[in-house]
Length: 114
Image (tube, rainbow, N blue to C red; front, side, top):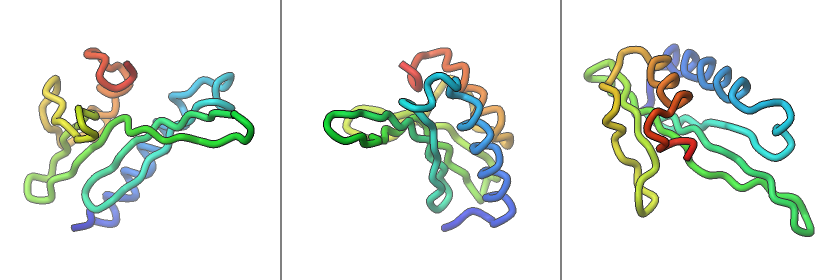
């Protein structure tokens, strides 16, 4: 099920701002952030550039925000073992996606930025 269109526009704006502001300008040739929205989930990716012969960008999942239409709230997930998403337990589900984005940014448990 897809998230409501107005909500999707808000999510795109919030994540676009986050992705553009998080990487320092001196690193932008080697590292960037991007996101994708699929159904009721928005996934943020770290992309690293590697040049060995030719330059390619490699994408790694960083965080996932899942929206519950029934509860009208967001949950935050982090990459776990075996390429599975695990519920991030350091913050409760929230009506406010910005609050969860801030948790990824500050990363008090070191699960997103290492």
